[in-house]
Length: 213
Image 1 (spheres, rainbow, N blue to C red):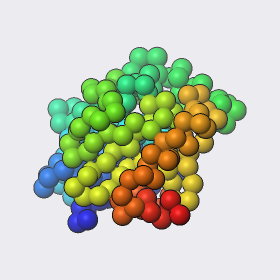
Image 2: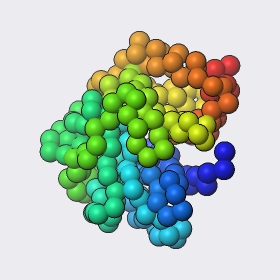
Image 3: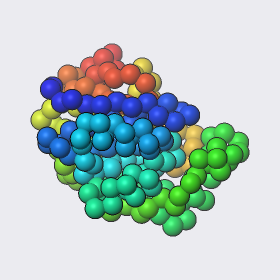
Image 4: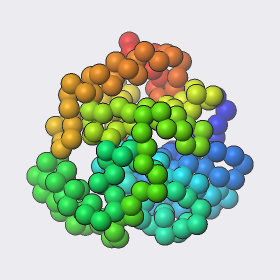
């Protein structure tokens, strides 16, 4: 695997924002959770242009920077999220995020502090098996109903969002979560090639084989 993948750890929940090369000048930004200025700076420093903003799911800590990124690169990049998490973007999305944060933290003060601009709606609604850029989409409900992983088969890398971490997995007690579904999703991941590298939504990288053990 020879991709020069850039990792930025952003926001109050230490979300992994991944900048993934598509060709010499264009990239996919996966889960821009916060700190849009830092993401934009990293892109400009490396002379890269985002072609896609890919969201593993809709929780606020994975998408807060979407608005500013889409404003900064309005002609270049498309926003993609699974159809079942599309309510986290666009009109009415603030109320959806308020419900999630209230369930997660007991209040919505964090949202009130960070919310600056209306989140744009998605350009592309993903489904199981969708292909976007170098990735195949794997639908992995459990953390949210629309949680996905982005799999580059040729490079052997899998971006798992909050479904699978290094030595852990995402919580299931928020709106749309399901412990039964996330176990099914994890079993599905663990049937894949153990040598596939895992790039999670939080924490350090791993491999399917390492996590399966």
